[in-house]
Image (cartoon, rainbow, N blue to C red; front, side, top):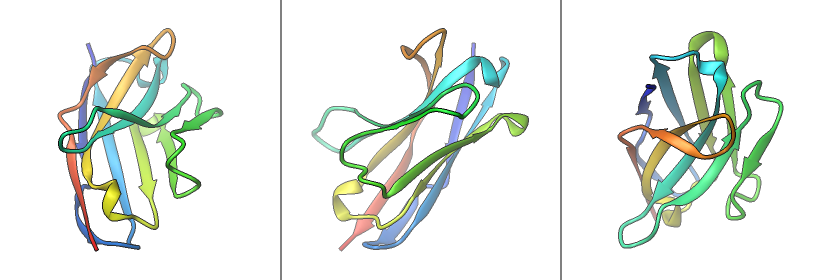
Length: 118
């Protein structure tokens, strides 16, 4: 079992930046590939970014277009999502997720709200 707790969400204006954090506890953090997803009202949950156990490989959803950066600090059991040039359409609840032995995400955080005003 892995417990994931997101933080760093909030209300910002278009063009601003936010840094989300996800603190993990319960299992060895570097055994897990990690990811970020988001869900906007009335929409399905979508993939934002993923990072391999060592941090060497990263993956992004098509909509990111260089605006977001995923990273992790295995010594601190934490992953991050740096979001720049935020747009109103980035408004959503952002979820941290952990995948063990592949990229099937099994563990999820409770989510953190990001609201971008125009």
